Length: 518
Image 1 (cartoon, rainbow, N blue to C red):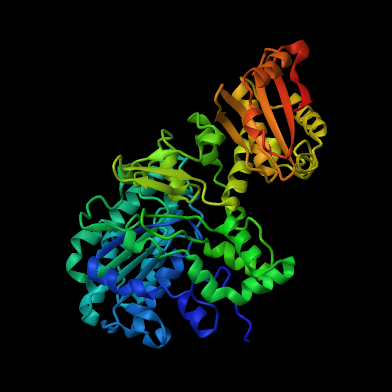
Image 2: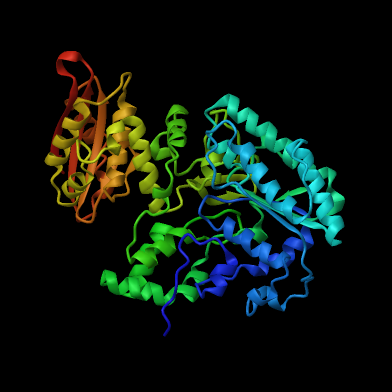
């Protein structure tokens, strides 16, 4: 059996095919795309296959049929006559520079103007693009194809710099405003990005732009179903299983927990993150690869500032309009969390027309919890120091709850910032427990009341009650009075009860606690 070559980070369809790398065939979507619209928009998270999809479309429109031999599109009745193709890739640029976007667009235009015999640098960028589209069509006798990769990156990267954001917005709006006026010269346009800025839409004049981001028939256009994963990468999964000294099903189950779970339309399939899967198979290790490629600190800040507790993230609800409307007004982080891949669809109620959302998988959960923790305490990003997650994890796994609480007490004594409250301390404890590999449950509704926090491992159950500027006795009494342990009566695991009080009085500032065995 030939060893598979994994195209980690590769976004060129011709290179993947010609150099014999593994390719998951998504070409079945080409024909319906051509039949159902001229101007298409697709939103997907970063590193999810958008660039490879555009490269595949580019190869098709260039008439490179030899590359598609044996793929789904090869058997379809389509026009393979080459068209002029303009691809605008906004990924690789420093948009913090004042002229970063302008220089990038100018570079694109110069490249294509050399091909189609134009030289008009004395006119506006927008007018040059318009002339380019017209001239390419007239010179070749074929309407042009426009492919735009990550159109919103010049906005996302500098969203906190209002003046530069507005400048880039105006420039993009002017540049792509040509699409409507040059309709007669355009065969097809496909635009990708992470977010669609409905309130400040660059494409607001393009009233026939079709957004397929949440369309059921295109739900699987990027990302891999489990069937696609197993059919194309069984050999790699088997090798990974051998490395982990597991059987195939155990390893697949762990990969599903870490990388599966994305759902972009109510009737779509659950999808794996392609980037993380390829890294896992290449490195022969299951790790949070995708989250390590970017740190959306502002999203975590918005979550905290909007009063969204860590335990409320799973279960947030939104309308379709919410999920397709994004702006940087800080009023609602949920749409951007969905479009950037930190939330996904858990379920859809067609009667209320509400989507219930959740974190997609363990990879995103670990990454986002770590990021949220840095919002509460910047030291969580430092090596060593009070946040020694390995020690916290070991304490919970081995039932060393006294050590866990002592460690937590030491860490919270020097918690940066002011204006803390019970929610702050509870959030930190919840996030710590989540990062330790457990599935913490906050505010569980019991028959006598709502418990603050429940943390379970294979051998132990920990029931926490938190108070603020009260007493440890109050916390422990509430655990007993409301019988939080009652629902675990048939559970064979050892149960610990932890009453904790966060005291902000200067002379006694810090965490006080008491521990009992149930």
